[in-house]
Image: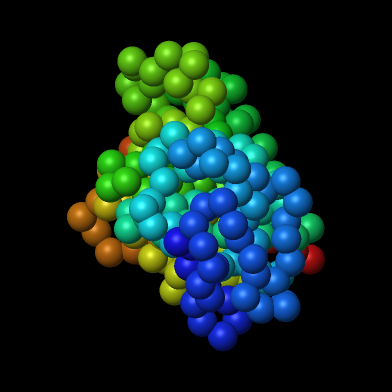
Length: 240
């Protein structure tokens, strides 16, 4: 069965993987959101206004979930450690511009030393607790890349990045964004930045310490990103 959180709470789809019929008229089919789940074809009906949560019983395996993500257009999927699938809408223009600026600066820092790898918001990471999350930006150290083949790097990466960035969008509430950052840290991330353009602050997460806030025009990296300096004035300019 599939349970979908709709505008008025959970909505149960009537049958197993093969037959999905919307229970409410305000649900729209996302074309081609089709996957082979245990060798059965299925269309997933997703609410008109994501993000929403989907719970599958039994839950999908990692391979099935990755196949679902590959065949789902228009939205991005993540999975919690409990197996709940979260549906996220594409970013708006200002958030997309802000995220591209973050990637530009992180990539420029990487070019100076060319060690490890930098990833953008389209990258998924399978984490030790069973979740699969996608940050807005991430960095893996050379040591973390050891043992990963080119084939494995072409799929969702089975590593917790050394560094992650989450960029708060205008529709994001701060509490859920902070909770996601805590999940990153619980899975072994060494440094996490939650960037909040609304308040023009960067919430910095490091193991064994409470989050701290940096409102300076340039935020300095530490640990795996020592030497990286984020020019926040360029980030905020994307929202003006």
